[in-house]
Amino acid sequence: MKLRILGATAAVLMTAAAPAQQQPAKPIPGLKAQPEPYATESVVNHPVTIGWPEGRKPTAPAGWQVVKFAGGLEYPRQALLLPNGDVLVSEARTMPKLDADPEVARGQALSKTAGYSANRITLLRDADRDGMAEQRFVLREGLNQPFGMQYTGGKLYVANTDGVVVFPYTLGQTRITAQPRQIATLPAGGYNNHWTRNLLLSPDARTLYVSVGSASNVGEHGMDEEKRRAAILAIDLPSGRERLYASGLRNPVGMDFIPGTPNLWTAVNERDEFGDDISPDYLVGVREGGFYGWPYSYYGKQDPRHANEKRELLATTLLPDVAVGPHAAALGIAFAKQGAPTAYVARHGSWNRADFIGYDVLSVPFNAGRPTGEPQPFLTGFVADKGKGTVYGRPVSVQTRADGAIFVVDDAGDTVWMVRRTG
Image (cartoon, rainbow, N blue to C red; front, side, top):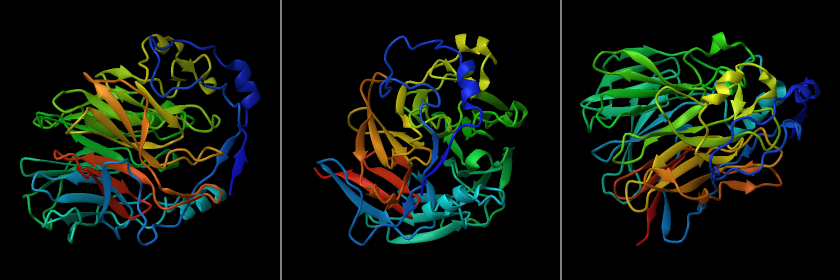
């Protein structure tokens, strides 16, 4: 079902819209000509998730094989590949909002986005290394919408929606009974339930980066509600001190370093209720102290909903590096650890667009730390029937292994897929 919602003050805002401001020095890969704001109506168009039929799986390019590493999970969201080969998976779901619009609530239910949340971490073990996990253990339960995880030096860091905790953990351990120690509190919840909190350790394991999405679409509740949000925070682990690493990033869920470098990249979900084709989600190499536009501007253009606000920021606002599609919900990014330099991007799929976009994993070529070409489809086949609006599953995050294998977490499909080369 599609519900079309025209911006309440679209006509007024369009007349107040600022002209294009700062423009990129060179073309941004993946960025097409952008229409004017409100060129099309805002659409609520959630998919209907039907699950994977027996024998069906996503489609990879020639030379790659897709293996069901583990199925039957409870809405898996993020994976962590441990040094001993074990794979941890956080299982959690968006909590239904009592005051949600009925059509939005119905769409979230049919798409499996919202509902019961397992709030646990499961350990998957492929002891015989055949690409399928034959053992699984509930490592820890009773968490609060866990998402990101990181491991170093006998410690497992877990990002709940309201804070980061750390557990003592020994590789090979299949159950954690120790009490966690909280190292940071975080603002919980948010727009469209921006509750995911991802984690990434710096290469020297001294800094823990934490991604926190916005509390609103475009700051409609006031910017006081956005403190420490729409941002990446950095926690110095030896001292416990926290600093704002980068801001103006509406929902920066996926994070990874280019292998062998300190260059942090993130995948960002851009704003909604603006029309079908603006504003594209993006990848960006994050600079410490950088501001990336949200909510005041997008791709160097002033958002008409913030006309004449903070215009001075446009001169110092940093632009995206790669556009990956409007409303595509780019939630995961990981760089290849073997072969040609490549970023893999998990696109969860649109809900604010008349026609589906996303529901796939893209590959983006890199060289010398920079993108060198257009994003290309890599893992597809998640859409069952576009005409009926049905999908088998939805890729939400991606991790890469030193041997070249790629792990894709499919939350709506309750599955972790492994994609590996056949030769």
